[in-house]
Image (tube, rainbow, N blue to C red):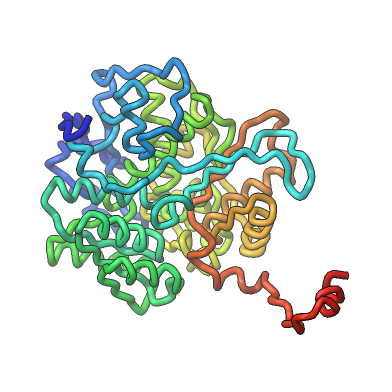
Length: 430
């Protein structure tokens, strides 16, 4: 399939007014709905990518296809499954995608926690194995490929760290210029990644939302391509690939519940979008129950799901990647959760840190606080006996703990040094 050009056959549809646009007509938000946007509210006019499902004529695979055989890149997986899932990406040439192993991340089955056997199936989707150690590489890959095809050589994004380091790394592999605007409180490890990848980093005195607004103004001023969460509809198209992988890795079955960390609402919308694509193609017959997990210190999305008027509470949480005052993809996330009977809950910072420790010592997987929030949500359900016996449950591990070591310092105690003698060693081993 090398160099194969494709007719992508998709349109953009506004999640608020329902108006559709040709892919060449609108790249970001619905121009009509944006007129009513207010700085203190989630933006209206976010675009959803809709494919020509009737003419794709995809069918469910008759048998499992191993993800562990070459090609090991998620973008090529669609070719293996009836050679046609590739038409569910908004790019024209597969060679536009980065030459990195993006996606195809492991799915681990866990049968016990703290030596207690589980009565249900627990699966951990480890997206820390992506090139820059977060799920956001999936989005950056599609955005980068699209920019390459459209002739953009500079891509800008606002980020608390992960999206920025992801875009910086992907652009480095593609020979593109990345400009990353971050709040000055972003974790050092993520800033280090951005700098080492050679991107231009701009730190601002303010919040993520301030960085976000500045990146939009820069896009308008300089004509750069913008990767921003929700603002660019292709971020959701990249993140939806995790749903396709889960479908294959679970032997073409649908899990009962999937726990997802939520900030702006793009990862959860991407997960929903992937399963919705399969549903629209009649490949699956039902949707999984997706559980949105937010930090109690930044719950602006789930707290407003049933509200007529959006109310902001300033965010204060150790989970920086999901610390958001204005969830940019609120309306699409709200639609998905309501349409497909999704669930939501909040967890405290203490629960997040405890979940990170439980996850690490039981599985060997070290998750940053934002990713550990999903596992904390799972533990809350487990401890409340909300997970039926024999049910299948998935937790998305979206980012590595090495990206934010400072957050777990309160849970760590480095022991005092001893003299290098066996007698001293015996004392501390008693």
